[in-house]
Amino acid sequence: MHIPVLQKEVIQYLNPQPDENFIDATIGGGGHAAEILQKIAPRGKVLGIDWTPEAISEIKKNPNLILVCDNFANLSEIIKRYKFNKVSGILFDLGYSSWHLEESKRGFSFQKKEPLDMRYNAQNQLTAEKIVNFWSKFEIERVLADYGEEKRVRKIAEKIIEARKQKPIKNTAHLTEIIKQAGSAPRLTFQALRIAVNDELNNIEKALPQALQILAPRGRLVIISFHSLEDRIVKNFLKNNSLNLNILTKKPVIPTRQEIIINSRSRSAKLRACIKI
Ligand SMILES: C[S@@+](CC[C@H](N)C(=O)[O-])C[C@H]1O[C@@H](n2cnc3c(N)ncnc32)[C@H](O)[C@@H]1O
Image (cartoon, rainbow, N blue to C red):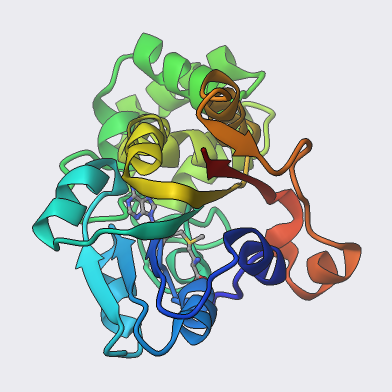
């Protein structure tokens, strides 16, 4: 089960009140949304979006919850389609959920032997398998450098090219072995491939300006990121729009030591929040 990260802080910064409308742009297991729904009863609504259809299908039905399977990069179009307005707050809890790691069987975890897929949505054409087997050495190096902040970029790319000449790289265990031969740990390469497959950084870049536009005056935006590439985009977005918003978090809010003990996935979380002026 996915344990929602920084739950108390999300509610504190979104400050949901009875009858207000909210968007949860990454509803996942629905943990944050469930708490928001309680606070906005009886007539407030949550528009819950997730790109992973399996996440949406697992969520408990609620008459005040509208569920949409889509990419949050299409936020403006989604709210038009559902005539969803007077939005008091929008939450982004970025990345993947425990379901992706533990149950999806799509190769998100380097600790399992699974197909090299890594797509949030199976309609997406690009997979991690295509990148490692068909992209050029130069393109693989670029993905690892830009999205993994990996130091041994050249060595890993060389080993991937060498290995795929012997046989196609089909699963996570094979890729992990190759990365280890290059003298590196798999975490950053897996992160880089996942970001590239799902075009994650571009999705965030596209969604944040739409979110600001959609919010009602005094509406609140809360974003939780899990690595420095995401957090940099969020931080720059807030800085570049500082004339139109009131930044509530001078420094990012991080989980308490107690939360990290209970939920180790929370350890890299950073929350930033603002109010639209
Ligand atoms: C960290 S989880 C959210 C967990 C959720 N807040 C909860 O309490 O259970 C992130 C979710 O965002 C979804 N996601 C990632 N990129 C997305 C995108 N571009 N558009 C919509 N959903 C996306 C993933 O499928 C995943 O379910």
